Length: 226
Image (cartoon, rainbow, N blue to C red):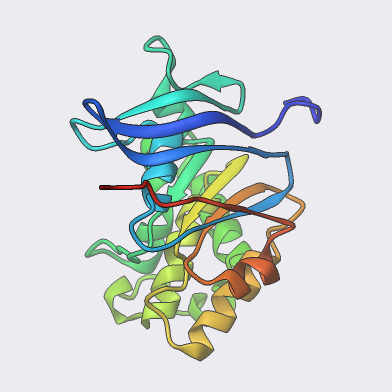
């Protein structure tokens, strides 16, 4: 990808249900290696925008405007969206782990999109755990159930699962909303270390958090009603 091409370009993007506009128009660029924040009041549609970026809107909702992610036009029906989602990865705000081992969870995305010998996949999963700041805490118990991890560790495991794919763009939806203060600081530190290597778009209801993590913050306004 050329450095001159943004990882994400969004122009006049809104989300509608029929004729009703649910998310007000917004525009932003996320350059390669940049960390951009998206803030706005509750209900303004921040999470919905992230889902629109990777073509995962719920049935009945439709994005309008231009969304180009890593050179792919998300609005083009011919675009290979599964392939794009392996390069532009959405990490949800609820840290969902599967009823398997810590290692199996870290391998989950890789097993579905990468054809390689297991030792190569394990090496990539380990790299993801290291980048997410979790390796030192779990390296001696990779076969233990992921359900034994704390909520903060689960959040970093979800981040590691995404990082194992070596994505060009990470979309982080309220990455610390379910965490206590100590866990929040640890996850923030892990996210902060990603800056410069990957493009990040971070959604948060906490403006102070976005100022700490992001070089630029874009505000999403509520849709006027009545």
